[in-house]
Image 1 (tube, rainbow, N blue to C red):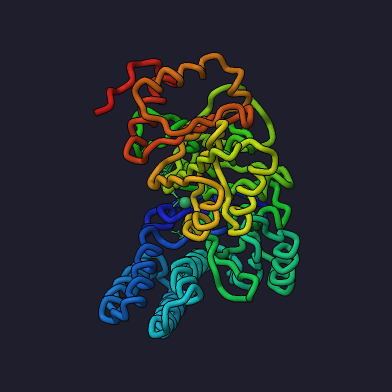
Image 2 (image 1 turned 90 degrees about the vertical axis):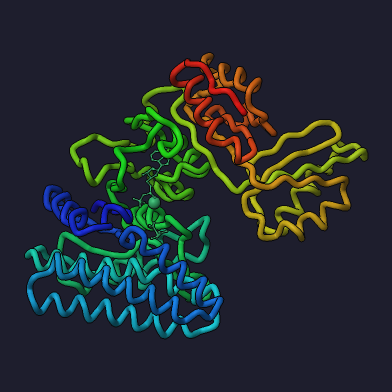
Length: 445
Ligand code: ADP
Ligand code: ASP
Ligand code: MG
């Protein structure tokens, strides 16, 4: 069994949906397909949730009408058998009527999840019916029947596997199962999500659950690039990455993979391939347990970072002091990403600032606190990076870039810099020149 995930742009138009069908047709064997919503649809659904808060029903109706048109036009272009065409439209209309009803509720996390996951529900049904219309047998599965993920950080993949098997056991055997990414059932048995971009994570949870031989993540770019192509020119796809390298890059902001995508597949060492739906013959990137080359591989950036400095004259390094500081973060279930210490101060970063005020209140007891928001962690990654002599060139950049913190040596594979987000793009570009192109670093203004 293989798990193939197709992202929003891969199912974003009639033409790309046809591409996906051709990709499936050219690959043999049993496959589970995890699909996103059509590109742009989840953003529209998030807009609906904002309007639920505002009780702005006319704005909600306008969006629902747009979604109806978009999906019906897609159905008409792809599904020409009258019976199947009207089934697909009835399904979509039913989902949209449900959306209309949910929108009359008071906003809650459950309402948010029910609304934003409907894009995947509609698109998967349309795709399944499109395959049937083309004579390709397939089974449509509701992910809510098996994606029982109570712990977002550590999903119980054995449970998901058991529920998945129970679900398919009585179905007619086919080579293709189609299901939704993004959605999950939480510990209270409510609909929830795997967070924005979460379909990648759905795919690797499911791959581990069904003990798939590989996962393929199909998107709109030819693999994992050595730097963020949205901000840096002349980036290139990397042929091979180790699980650890890819996990660091995804966690530290490489948008191509949801931050937690890699962790489930590391457990069972299931290789993951990143491929471009629009150029399927290109090799893409293979992510596996193999280490093919050492040294610098790629750079990524994670935004929304808050830096907290705790300055204390009361012997910061006295034993037990750090423990007390960490306990405060632990109490509020807030992960620390970077940390540096000196004799009188400790600086650390968090990305989840939901409990920031409570954390700061408690930290006040330990010293003088300074908080700086809107920072970015720039993460430089490669197996054995620390031993790579050329990496030291990055320190030349410190003349030009105000770097707030550096983490070097925490692992052999990662060097992290904390910069003000307004310097992020310049830093990514500067590092690209220094580390990959050895050209002059752009000047800061
Ligand atoms: P999908 O909808 O298929 O999940 P995403 O938009 O989430 O696609 O991810 C693909 C996009 O990620 C690319 O189009 C690219 O702009 C962006 N991206 C950011 N960093 C990288 C990187 N290091 N390598 C490749 N793409 C990246
Ligand atoms: N459709 C969801 C989103 O846009 C999930 C995904 O595409 O991965 O966030
Ligand atoms: Mg994505």
